[in-house]
Amino acid sequence: MGFSPIKNLGGIFTFLVFFGVLSVLIYIDFLPLLAFPIGLLAIYVALFYPDYLLIAIFFMTPLSFNIEEFTTSFGLYVPTEPLLFGLMMLTIWRLFLVKKIPNYIFKNLIVIALASYLLVTFFTSIVSTHPLISFKALLSKLWYIIPIFGIGIKAFEKKKMMVLCIWLYNIGMTFAIIYTVIRHSMYGFGEQESHWVMSPLFKDHTIYGAMVAFSLPLVVGLYFYKKHDLLTSGILITLITINLIGLFFSYTRAAWLSVIVAAMVWMLIYFRVKFAYLVSIFLVGVVFVAFNWTHIYYTLAQNKKEHTTDNFEDRLRSAGNISSDASNLERINRWDCALQMFQKKPLTGFGPGTYAFEYAPFQRPENLTIISTNFGNGGNAHSEYLLNLSEMGIFGLLTFVFFVSMVFYRGIRLYFRLEDREYKILVLSMVLALSTYFLHAFLNNFLDTDKAAVPIYGICAFFIATEHLLSQINEQAKN
Image 1 (cartoon, rainbow, N blue to C red):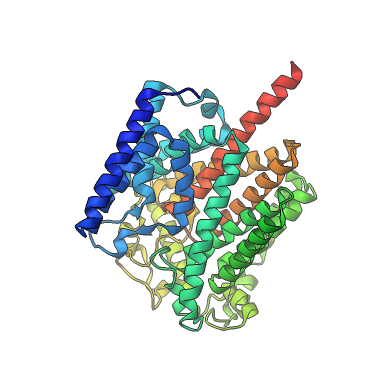
Image 2 (image 1 turned 120 degrees about the vertical axis):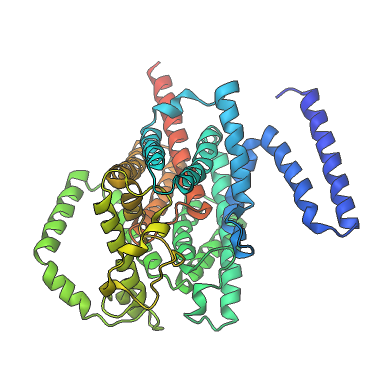
């Protein structure tokens, strides 16, 4: 890179202003305005080093917090969402004015699937029961997707950038786990306290457990993807141990089960089980459940295991308790509301982001639990799939499933096409991380938060970048 007088003079001036304003504010003890010089620094980095700012956001994501915890005005995850919004505007500027976005991005099946999903989001926002809320929900999706795809794909063409990104994300996640475990230990690792000790970094133990489960395959992948020196190996083993401790004390049954399923997915990939066999097994399973549903439901109804027990096995078994476990019963209540909402508006749904405002009238008296509420403050539909179905109708669900299917299809296909061992292990670890989340997505929905959206869309960007590099290598080999 050559020397750019304007760029370097701009950098010198920006840093002089930054440190000058910072010093004055510290001297006069007016700390709230520290946001100004920090924002000024962020603008400079965004303009001249957007790749590094995006990667820094991956580190910040596990450590961000919703200012809704401290104010009743509005919800916003800081510092990640303001930075992502700024990068979104920069990406749009680069796309339409500078035209620095690579053309191959728009031809990728993952991008096509995601674009179809966003198109449905847009049209259902127009006919939404709460258009303003729906367009805000669309905007929040865009400020995750546009900068991560627009800037991240080009950045991740360099493997070292993606490895750095995984390192920083897992270090941030480790800090969040250490904070939570230390705080939890002050309450004797009690089950009730496990629901909120991760605050304000995570809203509750469900999203915390989901993202700990998500990060575990990634840090294991970092350990195995190449031979490390003794110090690095020790650090990675420490990170893996901290992740396992965090996972256990999250007391999140779905997170535990998702890690087990990820191990099963690894076995299916390792033994190269054909897709046709998996479809056949799935169809046989569906038929079996359909013909034996009465017996299965009766068996589940006899399950009295409570998730408040200290026994690990009993906690796992309590996931099937639909007779007395309030958490499970409330989840069924929310699912039933989502299905009823779909039946009322099967084509367009009620609009993106509207479930919390619309589900209350659909609650059946027999489904109400001690934790039921009519104010939308006890969680959402508790399923990414049913949430899309109720808010955006059948096309919302189909395009979301299309997107998820393409992510796994292209990711697994990429794994088998790659010959570089380091790339293969990194891609495999990402596929397994995704499998933990999208299994979890049957039971919860977190893609409307930076905690899940940033790393998941980041992995999608890496898949797209790596596919492009592989196609370039193949073309060069042919020539």
